[in-house]
Length: 112
Length: 118
Image (tube, rainbow over all chains, first blue to last red; front, side, top):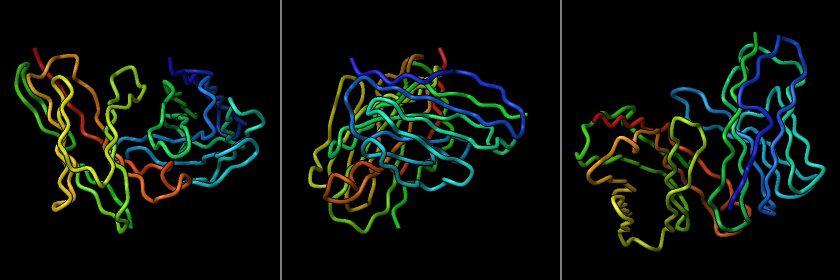
């Protein structure tokens, strides 16, 4: 069964903290994605990775970085969290050329 | 530029009613893919269907059906005899291009929240 897991369902951090969001998939997918979801805005792509150590910026990369050292793991890093990064963060993975992505349960991050 | 519009922000129906969720897309490509996802209250997006631009046949899966019309750039989703368990946010998405790289990036609509009351 397809499985994408995220390290936390809920996270509360303070402004200025460094935040790590972890995502692991067990489907041997080459592609992995990080989105944020905000009311009225749908899902917006932050970064994606099409191979180990490869990454590309999405539509809203400012304030974020990513790391992919192993095929199954894709980390999203908030270098210095700010209140406008309070959001739901969704990780996904896919096989190249198939299009459909498989999502994790999401991490609801609150920055105070 | 590519874009997906879901004009219905929220829809409320009573159980057993039929409901249609609208999706209109914009793209310059002749080859593209369209998707529908369901996001129940638990938060995890669930893949429902993928349709490529060369296949305009309607699809039915149980109580779910999809109507793809290139002439109106629409890919609408109908739930027949709705149930409380259908309550969720539904997203329509688009991907473009003929190579594997481009077909893997999705552009999502803003979603339609469906509430089904008993």
